[in-house]
Length: 101
Length: 371
Image 1 (cartoon, rainbow over the protein chains, first blue to last red):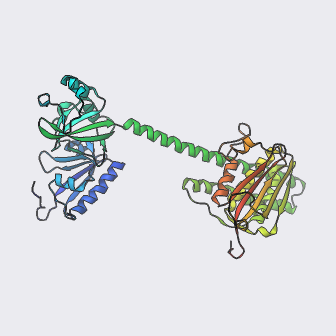
Image 2 (image 1 turned 60 degrees about the vertical axis):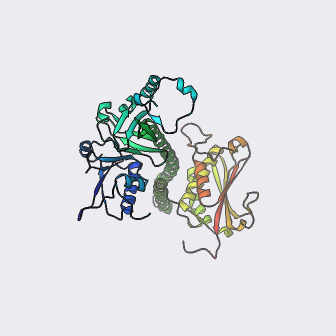
Image 3 (image 1 turned 90 degrees about the horizontal axis):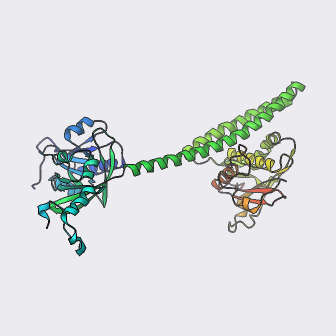
């Protein structure tokens, strides 16, 4: 898998589907920040709370949360569950972290 | 092995020769009937296999699951918790475990899913009932204190009524009204305490003239305890100021006095004594004696035996009849004294009365500031 580079002017986009303010959601949000830091801000991770926008989750076919999704690929590339292993998560989506070896 | 059956082959096979005698259809039967959801997902996150329990937990048919991009399951440690959103039913809290397997010769992930919603709901109900219990305890304590206050008001108003009938111009009338008005502050202080409890605020200890506070309370005690109880004050002038919440002290003295009245069945002597005193056999170490002032509330009542003494500080412990006591009076006293950094001791014997000693942290004259 080659390193993906952002197109000029636009940041690559991932979506983080969470549900409300559960402990799992809070952990996922904290990990989202770590992911963005690990890429030195060169990524946009949109947060979608499926409790407030259930139709968005249904349209995307999200069965469970937290799910981190690259909806730009077909089929969408997704991780479900715990996303605290930053290196592994980024590698799965084809990125290499910029803050550490 | 087993590829043609589409069953998972664990990377490090469990070595138990007895398993070889179990047929593959039997293994399939186990997986298909286990209560835990079993999913096999390829590395790109597509579902390869789902057992009936997994279909139930995820709320979709096997055919549907095989066609949705579920995603690659990941756990940070041993397990991860996910929330499953099912069409037309409540979200389920699901515990997920993931192991690496090979499936039809390809690396894959086996996720086992367990619906822990019921367990979570049970935990939540338990937390809720603990909270309700605490609120109930608090309410009972406040009711107890308010009842004492109401008793003070009732006797004060009776006196006032009598005085007005006899001689409305007597300066005592104004004095009664003034004292009752002062007691309304106690009611306000109680609600403040309710707030403080619910917010877990600390008490507000301040330099308090112990003798003065007790003196100002005594005229009310006289009325609240009834004419059968004689009140004797033995206040030593050298005790000075103590660092306590004065409203809590009032409540504590009131609680002790009400207990004393009940122990004396309405007839006897209530003695309130203050003095600088050695802590005696209390395990306080040396050099602490001068740091404490003692306030003792003693009665000439029925006293308590050892069994009762051992339990008196427990919340809800009461020897009073149904509807007469909450068992929270002494636990308030205990809470107040210990939170103030003081100590409490009870001397009592059956038939020879009870003395409750409150050791309160003293402010030395050179420490005392304006109150």
